[in-house]
Length: 369
Image (cartoon, rainbow, N blue to C red; front, side, top):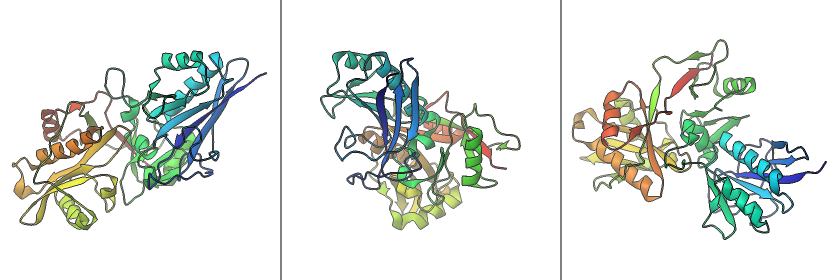
């Protein structure tokens, strides 16, 4: 029986992107800075096996590790891993990346044959600007430009990538730290162990998002009236606003007060760390704000859109949504939004601005017993 090894590396985000750290991590899910590795082999029967493990990178700069971005998966294949064996392993790597809601699969083809390169091209890999031999399969956008299933689980995609530094984990379950955000990432089809990990990580009575297709265990309930919708802004260019100011940690007390009065949804003491927040002041007082929250690779959620009751009807919320969207577009990403299904006024506003309801964006919440 012969085997052809391949290694799949998912680079976790570090607090400072200029810092490279290469660590062992028993969690195997990027709990801290380092490389989460899945390795596998194909025997003579062509069976693909990909299992999670963690290994220290050989050295900074080896393979693509110094080039891969947060949330990406790298396939490392030896020159002997060719033909159907490599094809099966690349397919398995793509499947693993998709389950983890990774943003892309990256392969360095240096030293590999033309046949291997053709095999990758057949699977959708394209040349990448990061190096002459680099080929990338983008998992964030479908061929027709529409969102992929990346947005089916935006919290999991965010916490396994750009927002990994804010994550608390137990097994495959990951949530934001309690003072940052209320969102939790749960696999699309949770196992019995996953449900146990949800209960242990969140505690009794906690609410969390689940996939519409997930089957809840006995005794677990869906939260009535907590459904929501997702809107995407592929056609929204945004526009800067001369009156909008960037809010900082010094503004958090005022932001929390505005949220408490207007109730746009959860905003916590450290939510501001998730992205850029803009505000409009009148006579020195914060009267409207909006900002960035979830950050699945290639996408950024606009959140906490709210206006003081005394300043409604002046279009401040609309202006701030467009201003935040402009900043997202400036860095090459696409804005998206969530709204309560019952908030028809907000949904109409967002659609008027160019956002569109995503068919697969229905949001369902459950509660830990």
